[in-house]
Length: 335
Image 1 (cartoon, rainbow, N blue to C red):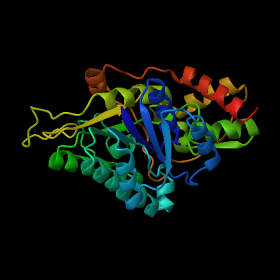
Image 2 (image 1 turned 60 degrees about the vertical axis):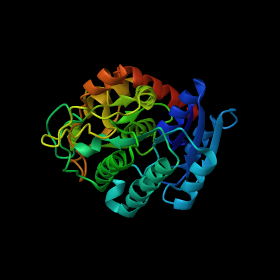
Image 3 (image 1 turned 135 degrees about the horizontal axis):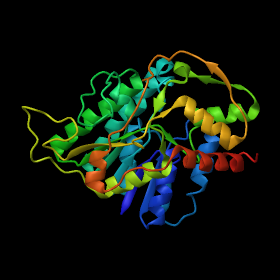
């Protein structure tokens, strides 16, 4: 298979590209190496891929319509995994236009490329953030998600709606993946795991929001990638029992599907910090703060559909995942 992976220098994208190359796929990676966080980390991730015979790197922006069209013209991928996006809930409060440019305009360009170049399956990153004000636990793809709490979440919900439109109008198989708090080696420096580790090792206080009562379904990156690979191979189909009288949000009469990929085991923030302290051999200095605008207090993934359709359930414990992350962090930063 020739597979286009956008965001190939990102956390999940680089790990996914490695996995696809290892099993013999040809990977075309697309990334803009922007400065949302340290681009040198992105370059180091990409360096692991460059030089492998079946990998091609193309630099560009999703919102550049001509660049994306040329990408599809020159490389003609059979499948597309769209992981490129402007990420982060809190950043969206100060920089809303970046989210519209990348996550809405950019996704539109991907959809058009898939439509005009006969892509067999588009898989794209959504987010657990779409559940917003929903308090029914665990979160199910069959729940209504019309009440997002941040523009980031709203753009991810918009992606799901846009994908459905293309599945319905043009028969393009699309699958949206709602990721739940991904962590692990080569992770994002703007996320709690990275921020906490750096601050604890440097003896600085860590900001603990919602007074540590926040719960997250922390999911190890290798589990995320395993789910993405299996879903990419499992091309979306229509649901023959779908009814417009009682519409199911997670499926459709079109070739459209949604899946949660989460550990199915929410962990309280204070417990995460305790485990991290144990792995680092140091105590954290905690700055206890109220919940921030745009944050949801808890996430918890129902993964029944993922298990049923592709036979996979994430299972890496927070203890095991953090041990691997800390080992990578010490090695990467020569600590």
